[in-house]
Length: 162
Image (cartoon, rainbow, N blue to C red; front, side, top):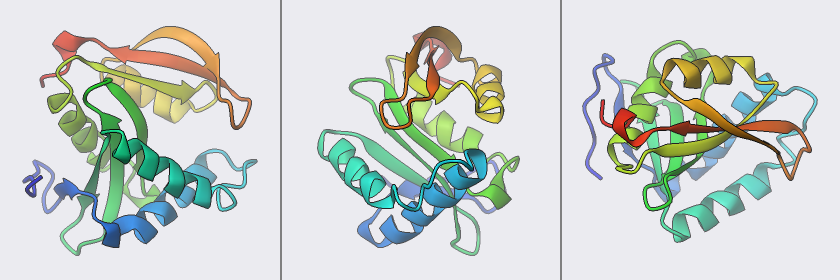
């Protein structure tokens, strides 16, 4: 994927490269640790890297957002074939910058059949974000790794082409 210009000044999107993996994992740990402080995400780092590789081997795409100084602001991992958005993480210092919406909009554009995701029920910031973006609750579940309750959210097909 070519670099995509952004409506957010100086922010660009591009597909993840192997050189991005360490920074991507660090951002994932930092973002989640801030959100769910009772879980040791540093200990889950190897799981995340393995999970990401398996998702991508099965057809998922990981897109990264970088600022003008080439700092990683966030990333999204989704599978256009299954319409499942598995990961959306933004660096704590980039929250509220529009980076999450930019990443989500690109996932929308590349997922013609809509998007589905699972979000922790006790993650109010993420829930508010997804609801503002047009997602609707369609079910409940439990995260198999943490045991925490989740909501299944769906962005209808007609909402996926901003």
